Length: 90
Image 1 (cartoon, rainbow, N blue to C red):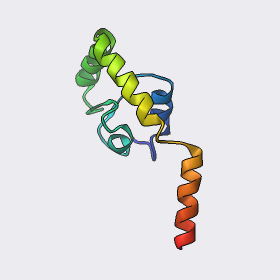
Image 2: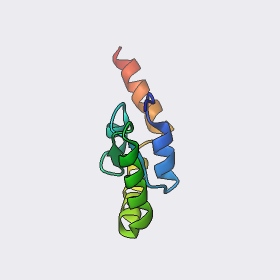
Image 3: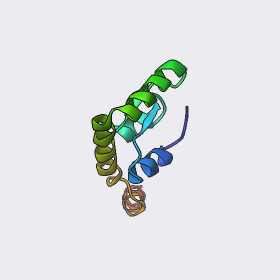
Image 4: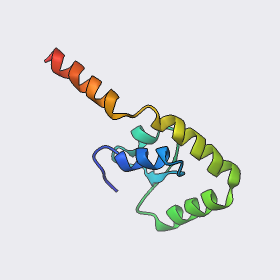
């Protein structure tokens, strides 16, 4: 339900795994339109969404493609560069 940054989501997208995540915390920002956000407290909705991704080949393929593209925007090199820029401004 909570993770400070969403590294596990980025790793899943990079591994070409369709992502379903709680629609809170940092998840909406990290996922964008490359995954499905659900109320993680609603077990029925989570289960239905998992079943939908499992049975709908087109949806699953779309999520995998978008997830892979989205994950390319996250890298340690980019994080280091952005941190350097912040520190230079300070």
